[in-house]
Length: 115
Length: 112
Image (cartoon, rainbow over all chains, first blue to last red; front, side):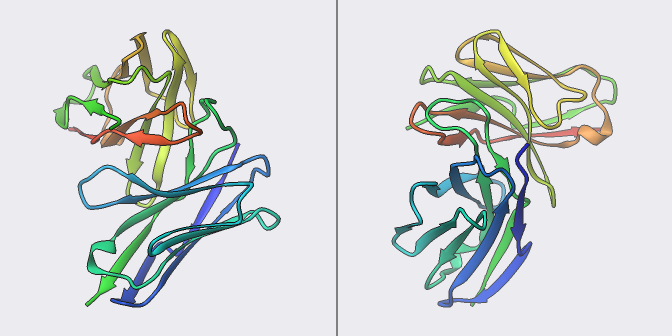
């Protein structure tokens, strides 16, 4: 099955700086890669996703890049703000369009924004 | 908006008790999941279901079973709760559009 590795486990950055979280996956058939943000005591919420036919996707201060050859993908947050403090999870799935494999998640990155 | 409701948010159960965690969705989605979340381990898939009465084991099914008698409801069952099942349990649904998965609020279970 799929295996997803996520690094670092904790990331502390100064407010206004950029943050980068990296993930690798093992199954070359995987073709959907979402990122979730989980604030303390709340459910994980999808913030951005990318599919294997796209190399990069951006949404305001958040961007995700995908390198299929190397089987890794990254989350980039620019101009970090205090509300970006949370745990971030990457995930990978092997199916699209209604398959029910679910997602395999990384172990999470605790992002701390220092004032 | 996608709505996934977990009716029991906080439970305390005794070792050996049978525990039911209920999850209800309101949008007729076929695919539903149960995940378990533990610090340092991320989210791990316990079971999923792709239709009424259909179920598949995930990565960590031992000690759990599931029931899906109606499309909108997916239940996680701990036949005999043990202390190592103390965790947060997240129900999720998968929309028909690609693989987007949405989570419920979570159920915090403590087994004493």
